[in-house]
Amino acid sequence: MAEPTKVVHPSPADRRARGKAARGAVSPSAHAGWKPADDRPDPVALLEEQNLRREPDLVPVRHGRMMVSPFTFYRGAARIMTADLKDTPRAGLTVQLCGDAHLSNFGAFASPERQLLFDLNDFDETLPGPFEYDVARLAASFTIAARNNGFSKADAREVTRTSVSAYRTAMAEFAAMNTMDIWYAHLSEDEMFKAMKTAEGALKGKAQKKAGRQSAERARQIAAKARTRDSMNALEKMTTTVGGRTRIVSDPPLPMRDYLDLFGNRVTRVEVPPGLVTFSNRFLIHDSGQLDETPPDTELTPIAGLPDETLLFLASSRYCDSDKLADFAWSTFGAIAGGYRRVQAICDFVHSKIRFSYPDARSTRCASDSMQEGVGVCRDFAHLAIALCRCMNIPARYCTGYLGDIGVPIDINPMDFSGWFEVFLDGRWYTMDARHNHPRIGRIVIGRGRDAADVPISTAFGVAKLVRFEVTTDEVAAGRVP
Image 1 (cartoon, helix red, strand yellow):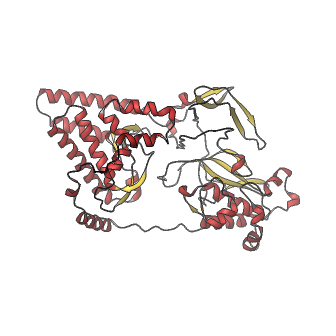
Image 2: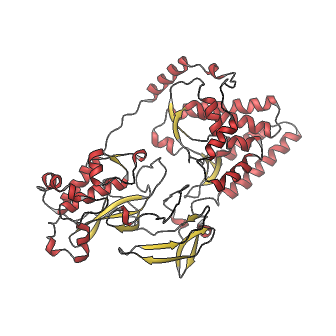
């Protein structure tokens, strides 16, 4: 098994020194006194330009929401603010921006462990960028919200300064923490209400005290509602039961029927009318909690002894063009004895050969392309490993499904469907994963086939545009299992 690459991170002292150097190059006062540039683009034109890349049916809905108040307009006008900030001073510190760090994107929600947390809850547009962008957007959101709620100029300024001060304090604390401690950092329910009680006790006058009590009561109501918002509460809304089985729900409702494909995968067939359609599905899977089983290190099964149904998985296929890799495979892995050792050597090779990169994903990339390019996503790891196994007369098939972060460090990237493969050794199929290259817990198989062409998440016959998709695979606390 390949050794994991060790990433060296700068120490807190190194980061502090870099921050001080950046502060010397661009002082905080350099951000004061912003004014529109002489060649500032028309804000409405910027929104109209964005609309060309949005789903037409949703544009009027978006505009309607933005027209409610100055704050709702601000929420939907991140593109305008980015254009206004592009020429402002920068300290040269690039971070992974939240994407929309404004006041209303902070909220309370329940974790799978039934703990109420307060944190950022929207990361659907996260991108690398200058750290000043998030700070400026957060500060401006407090100012606009204060004005929108009738605060005086002095109070609006104080609210904004307090928010920035709290940001600065939090960043100083995070700078002294390691990566995993930062990942799990949050504000708990007890901490929230303790802070509110302290603030309420500092209020003076009947009017202020009354407003404080009302705010505290409203916070308790919000907390009670937030406890119901977790990854399970939408199960009844997003699925239905037909013939004793849980199945996908569409919005608007559409007639559906199921059939089994050539590989035994259950496929849902639906005719979609013009316009926006949403498909959703949620379910519970009871898993053993055990790691993927490691194959025994037995000798390879001669082709004459393989079951008939496995021979299909020895042939070259759309994405697993093993016919182009046979010479390389035999010269590299032919001297390795034992079935499992040979397969693991292939996984080690693929794991080190391909660099994982979402931006470099390409739907037409096959195994021989991955060999040449050395980059791809999980399906490319699986395709290359499958092709090399088939070259060595080891039946291998592609799997697509869900793979949550159970028993491993949390991956900060948005979740996606996962691709791995299975090999036929010692009379049965075993799971292998060249992408992660170590056994995992909680794999959920959606479908199996020769390669990804046999098990697409969806196939459209006609013109169809994917507007958005979201994948979430979470471990459910024992007390929540029905």
